[in-house]
Image (cartoon, rainbow, N blue to C red; front, side, top):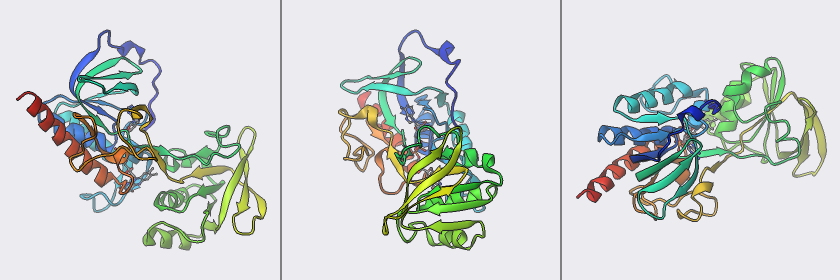
Length: 322
Ligand SMILES: Cc1cc2nc3c(=O)[nH]c(=O)nc-3n(C[C@H](O)[C@H](O)[C@H](O)COP(=O)(O)OP(=O)(O)OC[C@H]3O[C@@H](n4cnc5c(N)ncnc54)[C@H](O)[C@@H]3O)c2cc1C
């Protein structure tokens, strides 16, 4: 769920706010961390960032989160996470972090709306969709180029769309688009999909879905709206143009960790280095979810890391207070 940050200036606090546990991010990791810190009566504050509920709120259905044998809507699931954390005293703030100073405690966190001084910090800023970085992509985003089928699929009723990617997300979202679009062409760089076997079967058997293999999009064409994509076959080097109304891009994610660079240790891709106790190189700063997980990247694993980080923040503060 994208948040509109206009008209929030009235919430700007005059003084820095002192908090015991500040959670950065409102996805499964952040809300689970907040639940554990809240149950320890530490009144955690969760800063939502721009996407309340995180990536899972952008997906139509989640079928692999335990406890929901029939599956559960992505937005519904994170609303339940939020409700549960709030029930024990977590406070959700619609705000985004712009800067952090982790050189001493309390940590100083600057947001759009003010400043927080936090005794402990849980970084759960997750990840964002990777871009194709081809001509036309930026200009036509919101005019036919999308990174969220659940959000934008409805606009493509009886239209022809392209889905870019070959992993679980691409295939799941391609299948979701069959509800609306007339045709879905999945363009993939390789000759086979990376998606799980069940998803592959559903997609390959679906009458509305076809595949273009070994190909990449080299440009998205259109003025006011998307009209076509330029394709390059990576084996034959042949170029072609395919008329389409929409382009849905699911080619992976990058961690939202830019603001911690130089302060928290991270790998070359920007995933924060996290130890078995969710700790970082800065005592009192913990990491949970995709911001520190290049491997599993699931709701259940992110929520698990969040729970662990919440527990560790509680222990850390307990030790500080003797
Ligand atoms: C289309 C799609 C379908 C998916 N389907 C499934 C599925 O079926 N099953 C499954 O298990 N997983 C699925 N996933 C993966 C799953 O959604 C993620 O693994 C999970 O959401 C990661 O949780 P997280 O809390 O670490 O981060 P995210 O969900 O990425 O949340 C990050 C949070 O941090 C906030 N944030 C970012 N920057 C800042 C900042 N500067 N200041 C404050 N807040 C900030 C964001 O606003 C957001 O609230 C899917 C992902 C996508 C994109």
